Image 1 (cartoon, rainbow, N blue to C red):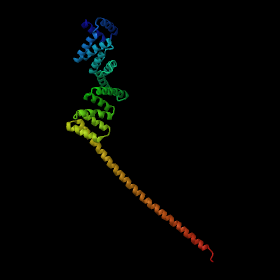
Image 2: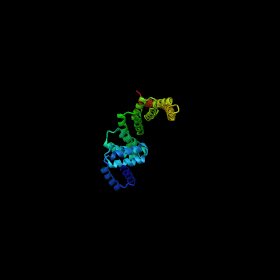
Image 3: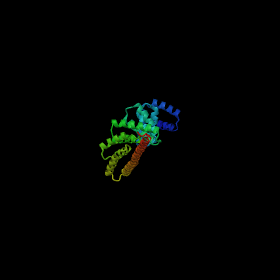
Image 4: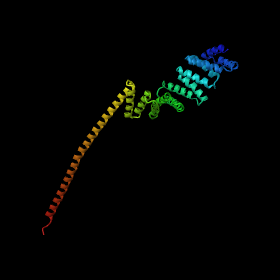
Length: 290
């Protein structure tokens, strides 16, 4: 019976013949009470064989027949995720997570679907919100089951969000366990650049080149950091020259002013003294002789 009914149900599902599907569902539930197991086995078999379209159709039927079945929604989400339909994957995985909020596998795959779906969006508030949700889910999974892969995914999202300090700590956690982990070291260097700690970033980039002398990313970063340092040194030198020139100009401009004030004071005194002397002589000339 299953061999006759399931292809018919798939056909109507492809054509979106919902009334017929509803009738078939009712008859299936009455005749095949264990159909959920059969659908899951069939869907997972197609999934493992990488026949994603068949897997999605079969598992979509399972979700329709058993809306409260955690695994039906989960594996349907996985089928969409592996076929590249990240929005549909997130929808199915959200429903599965709502039924089982503690599921780490669902949190992991939902975070993956959200992160991948965000990559096709422009850099706006919507993308930032999706990436932040994915980051939160990855951190929850990493806290319960630490692994380099999950921590790196979380660190990468934090870096995309310009959360340089948080991303740096995550990359460091991976490097602490695996000191020669080049992707984590590269992430560390990018975070340090974002935090304007160029000398530390250069040290990390040099370490990457020691591990992998042909690493173009690290070599390019070293060239860029050296250019920044050269410019900083040149800028500091120019600032010192400008400061010295300004100081010299101030000194020269103040010296004549002081001299000018002194000359004015002397001239004023001379004028004052001269007028007083003249006044005294006038008084003596006008005084009658005794």
